[in-house]
Length: 392
Image (tube, rainbow, N blue to C red; front, side):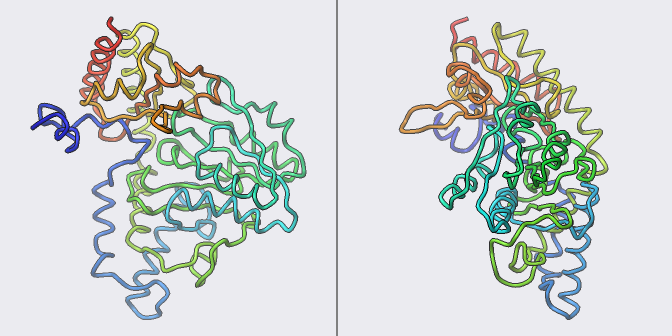
């Protein structure tokens, strides 16, 4: 098998699967989640809106899943709305807030938000809305002082993610929410990356809306949820039947909803244990890379971050070139390709990183199936590839 064919099949040159260190991109579906979903593809196929026994079985399953999602967030079941994923949940919040406001005003988000937040905001500028951006510090964390100065009564919504997808840096959501509410501003949090990795209590955070994505937490792709606190002014942006109380109309995907509910129930019972194990693995990976690569830089905070996320810059070598030279590792960079040229991550440049350091970044994200053996093998492969490329 030639090298191109090997990479196309997702195999290393010796035929093994690469070590998967890209859990912030997506996760495998947990076997228990698959088992919970299975009956709802064929045997329990009813429409939850139907009044007969097939529909009632489906409705009961959806109701149970809603309670499981709510329990993980310490929310009430009627505050949970199922969506097709985190992107739709973010769009509903931002565009729905705009629709609920008769007067076009302003919205505020951080400089490191996901495109599913920044792009709907950009769209709103075409409709007369003004969008402001909150800067972050060198660790990728929003300054509370900057937020306090920027917040005023003319802002309809403040949207700040709970944890960044590239660096894992955690944001002071509770404090930001208090500052916003003091000015009468609604708050939204994209928690796609932190859900099931860290405890999230929407009542403690005081947040008005929170988005989550199933495929980031060992549930299937194509399912997510939106928490909307009682009374929060978010109007529908799609129209059809009355499903999800009009916030997200359309016949429910019962199997996927059941899968998300099961994933939330599993997370509630194991996230503390998972987090402890991931912290230890992350520290092990950082220590081994640091000892093998002089001049290695950490991007973000080592401790004020997700337990599974490590973003590092390798000196004198671009991240995409390094990963191509280490096919035993399945990881990612934050860079993008425009017109054939690599562009540095917008998240890392917002943190003040120079172009070369940003282009040298690699994101290594761990998960439930990651082992110490994986960590040691990955560190060795990355160090070896860097030394070959850098001539060290």
